Amino acid sequence: MASLSDRPWRSLRWLVLAPHADDETLGAGALIAQMSAAGQFAGLVYLTDGSGSHETLINGAGRLIATRRREAATALFRLTGSRRNPPMHLNWKDAAPAASESFDFARTVVKVAALCRRLQVDAIAVTALDEPHCDHAAAAQIAYAVKGQAKRRLTIAEYRVWGEVSATRRYHSVRTRSMLIGRRRHALRSHRSQLTACYGPGFRLPKDKQRMPASDVLFIERSS
Image 1 (cartoon, one colour):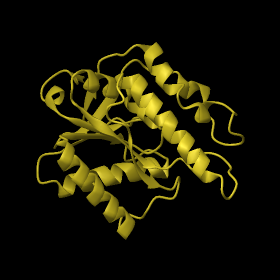
Image 2 (cartoon, one colour; image 1 turned 90 degrees about the vertical axis):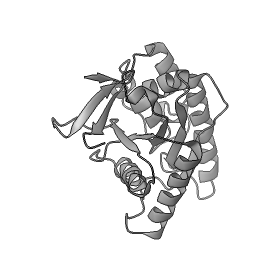
Image 3 (tube, one colour; image 1 turned 180 degrees about the horizontal axis):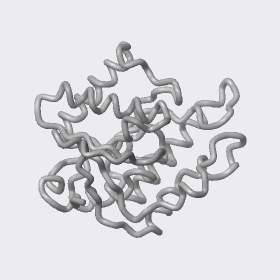
Image 4 (cartoon, one colour; image 1 turned 135 degrees about the vertical axis):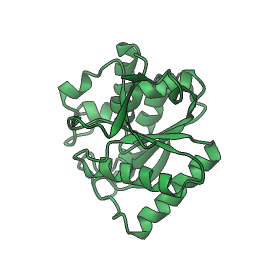
């Protein structure tokens, strides 16, 4: 398996696109830490606003969104050691992705493409296209649509949060450096709303998903 420290991967400038706040740590935490240390991390973008993870009152979604934004910023700080580049948010509703032929989808693609140009992004790390959650698949669709519009070479690297990796010769497998497990767990603990009952009934990250590996594996199409 290739290493992210090898050419050409180590020289790329990386943007991480995460469907939800906590996916960045679960699937790309080691990537973020390594590329940040190397000065090759362009930023982190969240697709959804986090409003669907818990039952909320009609006027209570705003508080949950603000909470999850704070948690996301703390997690990124714990992965990178810096608050210089806070996370960016596309503000789609949870579990209600725009159809790929819709205006909202096209507008998001234009926005992310412009961001990639401004930040001089060479590679987007995103959840896998075949992951079972609709938001994860939508994030991948956006990344590949941005690649289709790019006027410069843009690599798409898929990472896994949910689901098993299917054996295929279609992808290069590229592994990041290992990071301290304690540091990764510390970042994940930032997402308190996803780990505890402190915000009432809602999503709880399963215990087995909290046992994260020290490194990430990225899957890059061989044509990239």
